Image: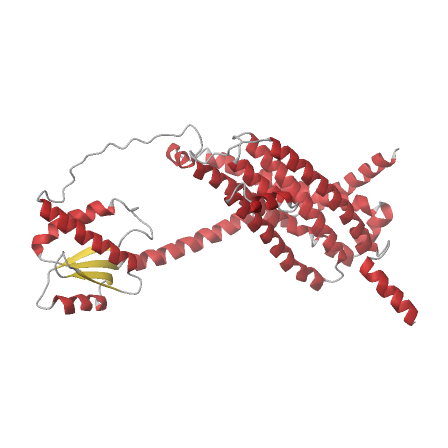
Length: 417
């Protein structure tokens, strides 16, 4: 049996061992359903926050102190102006309340902010040609809305045509044949975030893979049976197989769940289309996810092999998270400004290149840059895996030449002794 076939057989044995030990456990079900648990808590928290915000927004009012003769026109103008805003949201003006003036409109306007049945954001009083608008600390946009309400009401009164609409437009929705610039940008950002989320969620486990096996001496038994390079490759590929199983499971659920959505819901994504096409983009996403996982997984696995205690392992988690966040931020900045030096730097740097290139796939229809990028990333995967295997051997068995920063210290210690 050749050396390559022997190494391949040994690596496949480690892959089968680690994959079986990870997947065929009850804990793996919790890992597989972790996004569902996270989504459940997120939805519950979002609904609670939405109810709190809605309860506060229902009592918020903008008040106009005007005589009853102007109330009808003001209400009609208010109805027309509100058609420019979404029905619900932070930009939607609060409900309008019209109050008849008393003997002192200025004092009456100030008293509105102390009302017990509603919360006044802004109050308008005085003649419409020179109105005075009072506002609370949060009533900046509400004050501007009341100023425009007074302006349009005064124009309608002077024109003598009332506030009734004079135009009856016909609204016809149109479906684009090509993706819009904003749609391409949305797909590009979604691709960058998708790879970042998957690698953050999945590749970080590589750091802690060695902790348990080093504590119970399993790694020494493995090292006696097969070369440590095969152990490194096997563990890396086994973790990648677990990640592929995780992605395939959730991708199947998402694709089948999308078929249950009504036709109107799919129109919201009509403009969101990648520049390289709906077939090439998923293939590139899979390729770049593979590259990102192999790059980061090899680094994290080799770093995890250098730790001796659980405390050292925990101290590595924060720098690793910061490193991944940095790569995500660099790639996202390059995606937001395609063709800039930031985009070139993100695409050239090996550890941010998979994230940046999937963003480029959403913005640019060219295919040949992806072939170059995949070759460049494959080269760095080979470099990272080979260096990681050496660090893995040195960290696990303390064998091989020590690092250069320890050689000098060892020589000094020998001389002193």
